[in-house]
Amino acid sequence: MRKMRRRRTPNGAELNILKVCARSLVLLAPVLLAGCLDEDNPQRQSARGASPLPVIGDQIDRSSKGDRLITRVWAERRSLANARLRARDTIAPGAATPLSGFYQALIALQSGLRQDPVTILHLGDSHIASDGFSGDLREKFQGRFGDSGRGMMMPGFPFPYYRARGVTFGRQGKWTAANSFAGDAGPYGLSGVRLSAGDPGASLSLTSARGALEWAEVAFATQAKGGAASVSFGGVTRLVPTGGEELKIKRVRIARKGRRLEIETKDASRVSVLSWSLGNNRPGIRYVNFGIPGATADTPQRWDERFVANDLARLKPDLIVLGYGTNEGFNDDLDAEAYGARVTALLKRLKGGAPKASFLVLGPPDAARLPRFARKKAKDAAANAPCRALSETERRDYALLRKAKSPVLARWHPPPKLSAVRAGLRRVAERQGAYFWDWSKVMNGPCGIHAWARAEPPLAAGDRVHLRSAGAKRSASALFEELMAGYEAHVKLAAR
Image 1 (cartoon, one colour):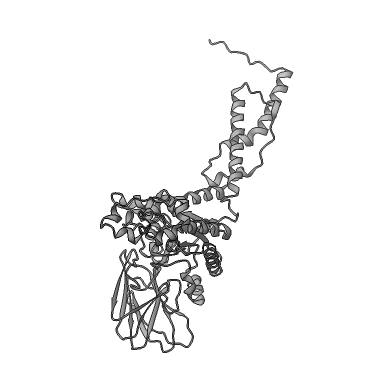
Image 2: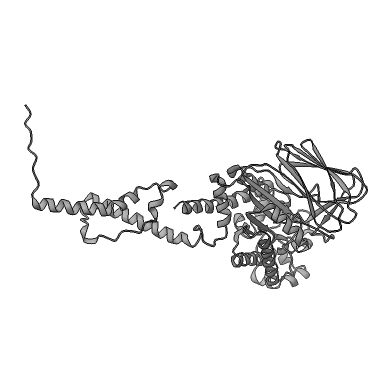
């Protein structure tokens, strides 16, 4: 038979040592458990808020394997605490950070706590009017957070450069476009344009290229002796009189599933359309873009305050993106300080109409200029001329050099005011609590647009100002990745 070994009973001294060890383990249990918490599981985050335990010091025998584990856990907890302190002043929940409100709206949307759409409103110039850059951003946001429909759009074809991704337009009869950038008389809402017709039978159509949506809406401007128009969508037609002594926005909404929205004038009195919308009744993202070629941050000053307030109340934007600055950068006579004051006034005006919105200010992308006198010397000058940023001397004497048609400027170069505009927009954003994104960094700084224009396939147009679809896509990806990196960090901090 196998001989049984007799169990030894510990003596008194050994019992005292075991008691001390047991008490130490009780004290260290929260530390060891904290080291095993799943950082990505919100349901196991509650213990993270506990205060660190005091250092045990000489009670630790550092020669044992267990004590090395304890030391490593302590180091990890200190590292985590330091990371929290560094993050607290950037995107910690509850802090006055530029995009915290927008990020909280996305969290509520993604967690199912929010049923209303999260709306992004993007205002700007030709970079936005073509719906390349903004269209790519829309697809990225809707691909991740859901699609609530196209949202509000400019009516018809207010200018040749206008595009709206995901829809097609039709127009019959005589329609006259009014453009706030061109100085045409108002009134204007957020779209900054207006289409009007004064003959019976003139029509506009808007068709979704991506299937049926669940509602449609048209915004008319009422006016004295205004005419009547019919609005049709999903098999439903409504007659809308637009006459009235008071100038205001009159909206008609049809809650019916359909793909094609039609407007038709019914008499010889004037009918004016400010915007139209398509949407779905489900949570997701609506990305509304209003851009006008040539527009600057001064263009919204020509918009009617009541109409803008009405549009903002209708949209309830969670994020407002300002995409101006390129055209200002080509204005050699621009007073940068006065311009900053006007941008500040625009931000405050939009904040007044959308107090819960976060703001994102885009610094203009890189752009370059080749003076006309240099273009005339050879037909291929634009294609073959090099690009080099201005020196300090050239920047200081730029007006004189350009007037004298100096050969030193016979090359592509960023206009002298462009960097000043970018810096000014950054200052305004910082002072007004908006997030700033420098678009030019995607292009690697001055003359990056020149490299983009010469790339195969080209990322930018030959004018060294506008982007090709590949360049717009690259820009949108860079901005989206930066915004989502901030969002993911915000989610982790909120979970803790």
